[in-house]
View (cartoon, rainbow over the protein chains, first blue to last red):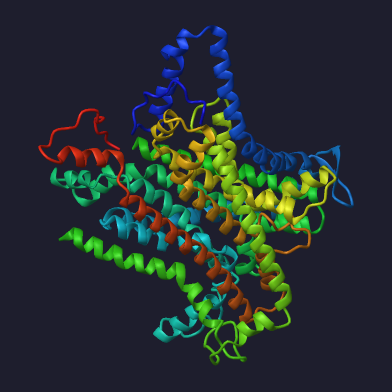
Length: 327
Length: 298
């Protein structure tokens, strides 16, 4: 790009912060810029700012229009009055009063909150060994990439279809019940397998565990394997090596993965509807029902508290991570 | 000794994990190849292409073909828009600017906002603007919002590994800004752009939540699948449909990987200037020729 005069002498192979730092230094003290007058320098800066603005404007505008405005709208509509066709901009607290009177909503919010935390914990426990295996045990880079892609490929497939695919597994005559009966573990088919909390948990785990595995993998892959050997040579046992080397290195990945899984499962409703049948609900399905009956402002109020619960959950997860680091 | 056992146990666990991920989809695919008596659970009743035939030529075939084509068009456009926007945004992020922190949080918000809320908020916003929601405006808009953060992160990773000096060299040799862009920058980053497209394409191809309230009667394939699953009795042709859409996603991924592998192999074969100098340097008596730049760690 034509706006990079004055940074020719940047050394290659620096990380982002260093580059940014170097850029700032160069930007302030480059000899040719010092030689310029105050006005020219300001012009050069202005041109740079314009170029950057031109590059970022399309994406920023798209996000403002299709992300920021809708989120703000939800907040506004939750304070507006319901009409037959939707809402009108007359301020009211009715929607929140209605919401605060609804025990069903709060029970459901609480349930969804805990359910999501349980799924976070399960996906961490079940996903961590996968990330560890891929990042540490597989030593050939080629196999590592290949296996990682095999493990991650379902991310690019439809979550609806993956939810639907649990139906033949879970039903009374599903693959799981049949297999368990064949082995002789159970004599009667289990009813809890489909249209139940259990089924929803298993399906969501399968859908979202990738969001836990990937960040942990990326963090663990940066571990220098020789540091593991060093720890062992210095007499650390497997547990100690894990706690002192592996866990701290993977902590950011665990936090990011947890936030991902928590938020995605908290806002989930299509999977709940498909796997849970009509018997399991979530905040998402409540919002959906309110939308279906054109109670838009109430749906908005429900959504606002869903977001607040999510933010609370993210804080809990961050707190937990900090505690871990302090220990 | 202990290390090897850990490794073996984890390897077995990894296989179990893959079974957990792929098992249901494989079972679904198998069940789609049943005879006319086929049901939605085991045991398999007969073998054959009855339900695939039903899918392609049966009573629902026209609707499904229509929605599939619509989905394909939407996904391709979404992939293109995502690639372009991710590219321009990441170009901006090659240097610091005043609101880079705020904008970064906005991009991450796109990752964190639940689909149903985005769908709901957009529906409100368009009602507020007194506009009709439609596939090509609202549904495309929110699909792009979903793909953009992933694509943006890919492009940022690409620029982090990118050597800025090649652009400067090109300019020093007298190439114009546009020519530098076309002949130097683009060839080096286009696999990243392809990755960005892949995310835009597959995420739109599979998206339900973000489109649910916005397509205004013009169903895409995921909306049709949801309607078939929840609104009517499930038949094995739904499994055939699911298998087919999964296949499209996986083919897109595999095509991308093939192209990336070919490009990487070809790039590995071309000699970089540093290697050229190294070759010269070791040629003969091993003296570094005059004028060769000091080799740099990359």
